[in-house]
Image (cartoon, rainbow, N blue to C red; front, side, top):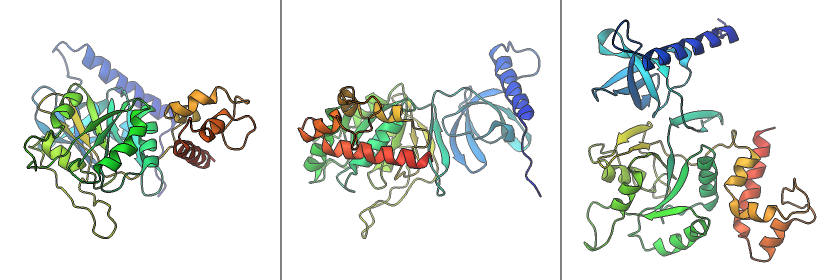
Length: 336
């Protein structure tokens, strides 16, 4: 049987109806039929979403009306009660951001909405991948949101080498916070950095991102003890972490702000990233690009390339240039 496809006319009606519900809610005075109740999606499990009622704080299971498209963790919604105590989401309020990652087939999958900062968690183990950090920063800035590097597991002996690697990003103006989420400190005088992190999270909707095994779930356990997410160990054979989070979940922080914990992400797709977005994530390259002979220089083998010249003179990180060219090639391949 052929799948029903909404025509443009149907889609316009759906948008008009959603706008009507939001307008009705905005002007609601208590009289007449309610347009719905405000809520926030705090977790997403297949077709079923957990929605927190904005007035009572109670959580209930909801399904989204098919006409709404994808609804994700962090969305602010209008919902109505249905039979058996469940609810239905009838409208989604405008988003300030939408984060996506590739699904197993390389297609975009929405992860979270309305985040304004991304905590890129790295650790001495597993060994950080600088190019992956570059990708996270580019994707975060394109949301737009603020990227913050969190160096976790600072109790490990390899911390010094990891810190030196991250100094490259600090020189670019990327904020860094150092933490370790041990239940017991080996040295009681050691600052675990968690108070600094809590203060940075207050008043924001933040997303945790990073390779599996870097301690994202351990950080959540320390920041939101009531959440108690499962914590996985590093794989003995690969040195990489096992995924411990099954679905994106939003937690309210005791000191204020919200934290979204998402499934372990090894990569971010760049299908919605433009060359200009990519350049915003490489301000060090953009500073030299203005001096290239050609305005459309891609910094590969064009004559008069000021970027390659700066790298040869040691004024620009050669690793960053290689990373930029690799990501640019990925962009071009995905856009073909």
